[in-house]
Length: 545
Image (tube, rainbow, N blue to C red):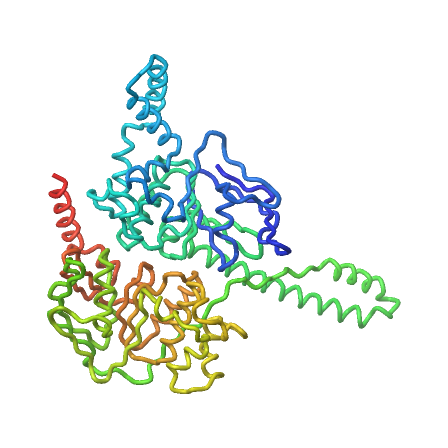
């Protein structure tokens, strides 16, 4: 068990938390939610001891081990992948290192023998002999190939480093597990594996995530941060949303009844306070009036942008024809003879772990890359808006937001353009911010503003939910569901994929593809998906032998 007792944290004059009291018990998974800036990550740092509160303390049941997801992706660059995972249990790793150092001594003494014996006993009690196989199991589940388990961390791609650090946090069955955005940079297969791991995890989990489907899947409770307080709700994210809305509705209805009673009492007092025969009754009603207290209903600190993609032109029957496209990058064939035809009703989700293939394909059909072989053709009635995964070059400019966005608007009027920025929560002077100083979330909202102002009838989006808070993801999800045109998109957000797509395209590790007219959940449950997993697990097994 872990609990926060009277936690207050002040940053300057502002109180981020004010006398927070909350208890997290064994066997439950708590989703910690709140608006951007509410203090979710900060609260996890307080619980893990990385940050001292202004007042209050954190209590952990004596003898229990706490583990948290590291955020520094370069901290372990000089260590082996497998060792980095085992470091998740600090004491076990220390024992392993010390006993190995003893055995390496040339002048092995009696004292060394006694010490080695003590360490071996403690190592065995901690199930140390299974440490490497347990770490490998976690890495395999998250999609790190066996041949990379003995690589140095610095030699791994950035997305794989994230997976290794996640495996480190999960390693050794910690009593308390703190996870800050564990699904960031994970592919949908790895997220599905993590969901199953946490569902079967029997200890305490506290997780911050912007993935609504993930929170619905794994959480038994929701801890909602709003206005410096934390309110605990039983159930998953959807249950929290319905419950919180119901509570506000009930409070409003109760206040309405109280207001009606107040009005009734005030009218009686006004009419009869000067009447001697009614004075006692008027006095009684005054006392009753003083006792009525309206419930304070504070609006949530959450802010939802308004995302509405409206194409300026209706799309025709011919949208996109892809013929035999192949592309090799750094000696690896990421796309191999890809062909399909996209129709006017299609909303195609590109899924699976081959992220390079997805991004490469989007770059090809938007003209950023040339295929090695094959061709593509857009219909004459189509117009495309593209949300790239890597937006570094776009924001490498000294232009202010409103001037940059005006370039893409047919109406060259600052007030008109600011209207689109306002929808995306850029208020007042935000419009004169320079592009290069924007945060990750602000950059995404600027790019979505551009897509709205371009009014295209085909949207191409490569991981648009990265860096967005839950409110913005919800708004984007709603905007995509309402969009009457064609969508090609990749997203790690399961709910966005499931509620938006009517067609699933997966690029496999060998560069080939699977193309199905179906929903995402139906695809995951399909025989085709089962066969694909079987083929690739067998191939990995052959490589191991």
